[in-house]
Amino acid sequence: MRQSLILVVEDEEAIRTLIGMNLEVAGYAVAEAKDGFQALQRMRETRPDLILLDWMLPGLNGIDILRKMQVDSSLSSIPVIMLTAKSEESDIVLGLEMGAIDYITKPFSNKVLVARVRAHLRRQDEPDADETSIINYKGLTLDSNQWRAILNGVELSLTFSDFELLRLFCSSPGHVYTRQQIVVRTKGSDYPVTERAVDVQIVSLRKKLGADFGVNLETVRGVGYRMRN
View 1 (cartoon, rainbow, N blue to C red):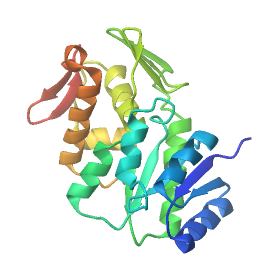
View 2 (tube, rainbow, N blue to C red):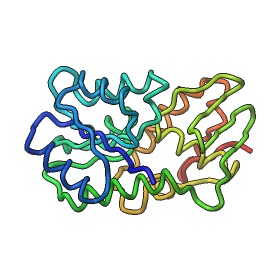
View 3 (tube, helix red, strand yellow):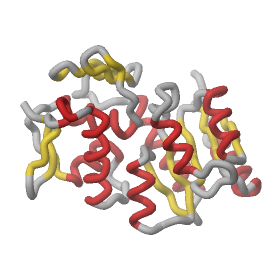
């Protein structure tokens, strides 16, 4: 069975080495990058299963990298966990808005880090039993086997989080999900995220879907969100 490959992007060698050692002990293969430009190169060379990305990097910072990944269809679906000392709510919201699936602040426990990595990879590899691999909704096709979203014949450039949100809503059109339910269903019950961060992700997803289709993703005032029946 192939080992999952984790790309560790961190400019401090001691931290990068320690993270890599803990991941290897946990059974993962590890690739490393020490700056933003090298990170993009490593992504294209290795196509990792998950990326641990520091925010403050020489060359391109973590947010710059997320922006470049969003517009590159070969990279946009790779899940990214941000690792950073920046812990303000506005920083967390920005990281999530730009496509990160998780946000871990420094200093952190290596055991917790490995547990988060394992949880995200397990969620990626083992969709819920009630979810089919192909979902069709009003001209949109979601293929969970290939992590592809095609709208009216055009493939969308979506982040891992975008795809997870769409899969949740399109699997049960008309069902209203609260913000907390959205977090639990797409990221897990122990994921620390604010309601504002969910709202920001929804707004970003609507823009990517376009005005004509985005209106199907409705706000239910005082409750949450749903995909129109």
